[in-house]
Image (cartoon, rainbow, N blue to C red; front, side, top):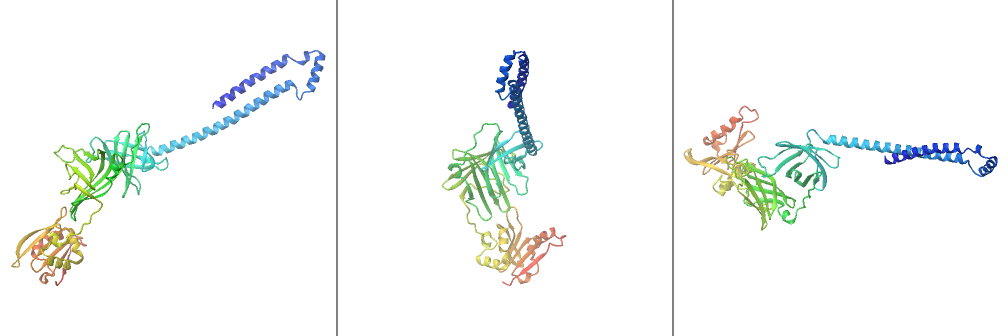
Length: 451
């Protein structure tokens, strides 16, 4: 643009100069000179290629035309540049319009998921969070989620977002400040660290995990884990000062799951939860992780935090998986001897594991039936009791399991091959009553074996 202005001024100046030259030529007309001078001048002029007056005129016109051409070319070039700028601006506006969904805040966050640079915007309300993110204005991905309230970390806002795509991942994050977010992107077993900084702020990016952070990383199994109870810890070192962990535990059919962040300081990774779940208690819940002698230690004032009834997170974990064998019918108390265990296994066949799975113990009662002392009772499993029923005598076994709306009954007593023994009748009727109006369920399948 400056170039155009300069050329315009030059053209204007030359135009004025041309006018003055014409005035000057009029005042010095050769007709007013003596004849000798005319002749002399004519001779001089004859030795020239062009008349001086004509030279001045042509030179002026040439400069004018040259300037005009340059001016025209420059304007054309500027118009083309402006057109490109307009198209670029419109394109950017169009892209930003696509990204700027309604209610999205004006401020962009910039950072990385793994080693991929991303840009993100968030719409934040009291307990909800949504937004979009993209990589270099290529693909916009909508995000929807919420702020954690029950498992809120004291002094921070943690959130979970999921990608609005058919095969998207989840983002777990924490606002370290209003302008700085740390967290991770998760899909199946893949976890990438994530950090975002509000554009225009001067915040130092987080450092990669050091050996002190990496020592927490991996899959850990609770030392006291067994077939019916157990716990695990999956830990990912995100940065030098932050780990992400998923704690899981179960007892029977009840379970617990807790995922969050812990801040590393002085060889301890610590989380302090605001206590909004335990009614009547105001003490904050503390989880402290440390690694010593190849064990992951958890120190807490509430190992059942965010767990079902009777479920606890372990306090000591070993690295990796541990082998856990299925117990036998003798182990869980269905029978009293190895011989009975073998008899029971032959009797129920392929359903042996099913009976064991739903029986962590049996609540037996002794009673007299058919003039003989027997013991009868329901199976117990935390969170799913009464799935099985057993009657054990010195000679016979009677066992039933409720599965797929039906009752599957097994015995080695010929007298009860096709009818339910009296101590088991009420239990069977209760199970069948639930499905008695269902044509596809509520049936008894009798299984007798002469053993």
